[in-house]
Amino acid sequence: MKLDSSMAAVVTGGASGLGEGTARALAARGVKVALFDLNAERGEAVAAETGGVFCAVDVTDDASVAAGFDKARAAHGQERLTVNCAGIATGQKTVSRSKTDGSMRAHDMASFERTVRINLFGTYRVLSQSALGMVQLEPMADGERGLIVNTASVAAQDGQIGQAAYSASKGGVYALTLPVARDLMNDGVRVNTVLPGIMWTPMMAGMDQKVQDALAAQIPFPKRLGTPADYAALVLHLAENVYINGECIRLDGGIRMAPR
Image 1 (tube, rainbow, N blue to C red):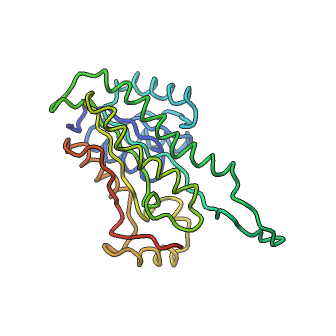
Image 2 (tube, rainbow, N blue to C red):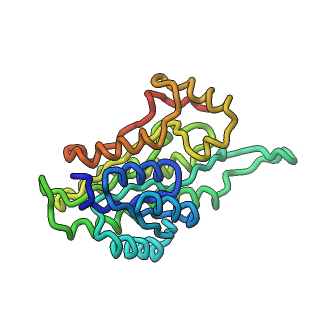
Image 3 (cartoon, rainbow, N blue to C red):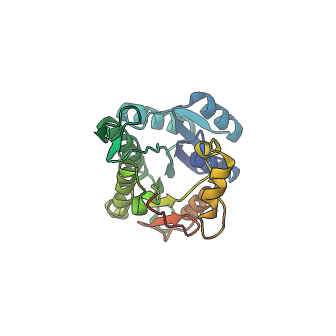
């Protein structure tokens, strides 16, 4: 897949973090980028800086996603590349003790379900609607029509205490990668998933520097947090290397997460 001005891409969660980094890297290569996000103010700003288009999209809603694709395609044409970065991080133990009265409680199911709706269902909702458009395109070199890159997490494989909901949602993204790649193999659409480790994101930026330093020290090499640029570089490689398909790749500096 050649990344240039003839290419259109969609990036969910494109207003911040890994999504923003990816959108900027693609735009630097001339790609026409549509950013799907709920943060309109930030999304419009990033779109203006990258020459892209912002689409207010709630990935938990079919109509919202469809409207986002309609707007993106009206501006740039059918996307050949979709990168799913939209997601949330949650933390709660299966059974926890109240800090106020010491009583025990089970995991809040509304929180569990919301995590899965956004991270897993949202990813698949965007993926499936994008694939529907991609399979109708004329093939490029090697018969390729498009690429979808999803974002899971190392928590899909070694989730920590309190990450039952998050790990389940990201584990689902991990698990669907190969079967969806097989679903789309005869249509020339590739599907790959990135499993980021401890990344420097806006959420991480709000933590004390000592906490950030302690986390970085746990990483075998390089001893620093991952960055949106690291993530974007992998997305660019996945786009340009047509032989990578149905694969889940850890992007983590070699870390294996401890129980806590």
